Amino acid sequence: MVDRIIASRVSCRSIAPGEIMTVPVDRVYLQDGNSPTIAKLFADNGLNRVFDPARIGVFFDHSVIWPNASIADRIREAMEFSRRYELKVFRGGEGISHVVAMEAGWFAPGSIVLGTDSHTCTGGANDCLALGMGASDVAAAMVTGTTWLKVPETVRLVTSGYPSSHARAKDVALYALAKLGQDRFLYRSIEWCGPWVETLSSDARATIASMAVEMGAKCVFLDGSQPRKLLSDLMETGIAPAEEIELELHDLPPFVARPHSPSNAIPLPSCEGLDVNYVFLGSCTNGRLEDIAEFASVVRGRTIHSRVHCLVTPGSRQIYLDAAKAGYVDDIMTAGGIVTPPGCGACLGTQGSIPAAGDRVVSTMNRNFIGRMGNREADIFLTSPLVAAYTAILGCLPRPSDLGA
Image 1: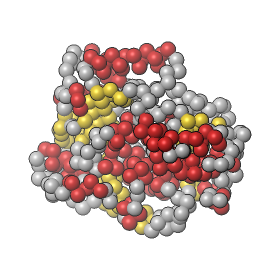
Image 2: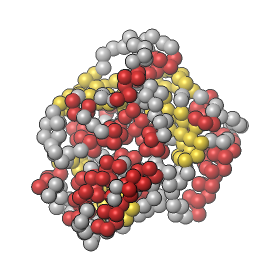
Image 3: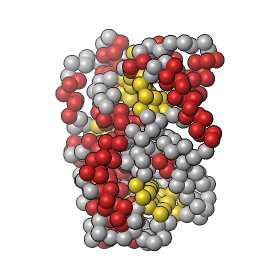
Image 4: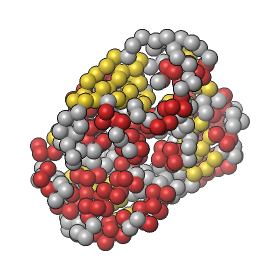
């Protein structure tokens, strides 16, 4: 898929992995945290125009509620930069860039989209070549409407069988990381395929796609994409067959990634009963309506454990409104949870809630590196929304027999 997309954009019948190509980009988006860095690059290098303001967005998602004067100043810089070049602004509270970009149709099938956040790869769920890049590369693309890249090799991740009834897309992603590691996927295009992949909802597909960067990949695609029929006119390219790696999923249990790496994942039964102080549901990986609905279905009519600080952050304003309309927000808050404004929230540790020293956090986000949530003395465990919900109720990681009870 990556070869077909690139070849179609440069009118080339044959491309090879490792080849350096300059390609046009369809969309570019920035986030509030690094927009001031790009603004400085513009100023320092005498850049004074962009290729198309309507196709460049600035998302105010990392710091929705400004926690201190320093961040407030950076947000102000980002706002002024956006106004100066008449860029499309997605204001604070609209949601996480990758989630809102999907909702807004920015990840069009067959298109090329750049973002200044590593999880831009989420767009691969919609057969978009979505690439996270650094500030200097994105600044150049904003001016020229093009970018250069090395054509990645493709590896097909061929799944067989189906996970257990309590395993979700997040569990499969964690299992793949634990079993296969990152080295074989570095700067490669991953194509997930197999009968299980084709059963995934759009929300579950986004979960898998967002974790591609944790696997070390350049980009990601998933078989079974409904829009893929729209790509039938992309030219066929003369390329070598992709490497295939088999991934057996038969009766796979839920997985938990222990500190301090997503690849440090083990089956849930190996860590059941571990006390937890803080549960976070959210992020571009698991902050969608399907995730909130499952969490709410577990806590409905129950009380969150007195030891647990429970925070739920919807991925977008639309998700928040849909969750409220469906009664999920009421279910969570009545149970004792806190529902915050849409955005990145606690995931990156810039605005809270910051865990205390010694806390064990169960989170549905994508990374659990040391200090990820703002405190190097806290331990972060990654799980699916289902496991996170039962953890919030029980105050500890559940047993498999607890799930669905």
